[in-house]
Image (cartoon, rainbow, N blue to C red; front, side, top):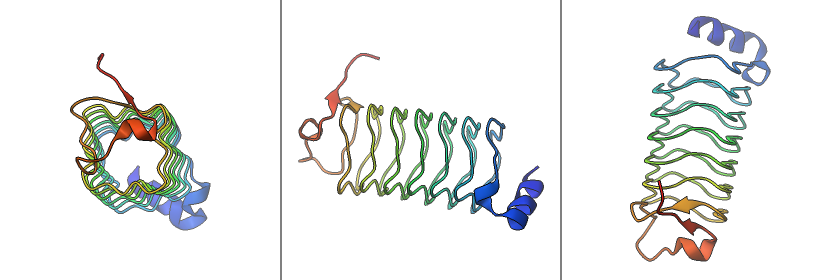
Length: 168
């Protein structure tokens, strides 16, 4: 199936490709260019998306639980209500991405770029945000807990509109 996807992208371009609703759990999409593709409701659980190009991609309601997005380009991606629990997003480019209601519990975002990203109502409980670039980020109504690791110890998420949340 991956060969067919690559051939189709090479023929018509990734912006015309729709993988909406398909299942790719555990598969290797590392380095693949899926820019502007429709990936809504796609299952990428435990998939390898390292260095994949997912900029301006529609990933609404996608399952990326435990997926590896290390150094992936997700700039301007639309990820409304996506499941990124326990995902690895180390050094991932999420500039200007829309992450409304995204579940990032236990996700590792170390050194990611979240500049100008919108995280309305996202769940950051137990997430690692050490070294994350946050210039212009919108954290209103984001949930976090004592285990959430922020870019540095002096960062106060309450001043950015985030909500301390203790209940599981």
